[in-house]
Amino acid sequence: MIKRNSSPRASGLRNPPAVKLTLSEAPSELLRELVAHLRQNRTQLREEWVARISETRLLTAMTKDEIFAEATSVYDSYVEALETETFEALQAYARNLSERIIPRGVETHEVVGIVLLLRDVLARSLFAKYQTDFRKLNRILDAYEPAANRIANTVAVGFVQERERVIRQQQEAIRELSTPVLQVRERLLILPIIGVIDPQRARQLTEQLLRGIRTNRAKVVVIDITGVAAMDVTVANHLVQTVEASRLLGATVIVTGLSPEIAQTLVTIGVDLGKMNTVGDLQGGIEQAERLLGYKVVPS
Image (tube, rainbow, N blue to C red):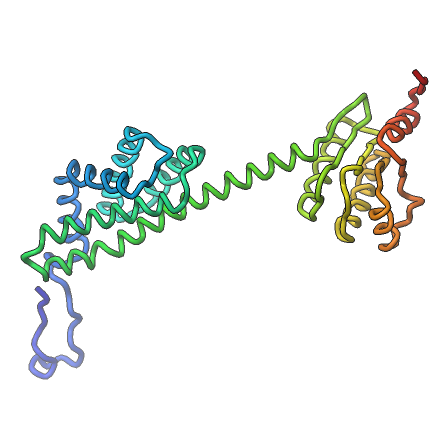
């Protein structure tokens, strides 16, 4: 019950005192009462939640036993966050959960869905418990809803961040596979490029090539772009910069497989082709690289 002092005129005070909540109405006390209810009814509420998950066909990539085990952990973490009013442990658990279930093909909407289902199950249990005391119910909900919303947000954000990290990791792995730096003999590297080159991939292949030059102490590099149909001015400039950066590290670059379209782009941006060592095809590029390295090319 909210207690107020007498009016300022009657009390002789210039300013009225602040309105305070009694202990029974303090949010922390209400949350403790809520937590006690959730712990007391843990088994029933958890089973109802798992049933709702199955009914709505969420987490279909997981078995019933797996769903039950994860639901138990999520429920306990949820109640602990309500009890302590801190979210660090829940954040850590959300990241750990995401690491385990993302490889199983669980989608973002499923994770958000099960958390919202749990919030609904718990809210329904509160309506049932306090159905004869609407004033108490409203105070309980006022204390519960902000915390429940923050919990839902914490789990969703944790899952999305982990999913984005996995996607970036996969993209990086794909790029590395699509632009392999190969050592064909001592001091000789080959970088075969196939497909579309966008600015991001161009930067990535440059980093890989320069790293390969330093690691293998390469003296000659053959960049074969036979599999590249076209490139825009930005990427063409990046190719020129890659050649120059490789030269600064002590490696000569031979570019092979230029198409007429790419050659025209290089001319259009004003590249001094006299500074770029080009050969028609990969075989010719390897032979020239071997001559630069002092190997004698003997016809078979």
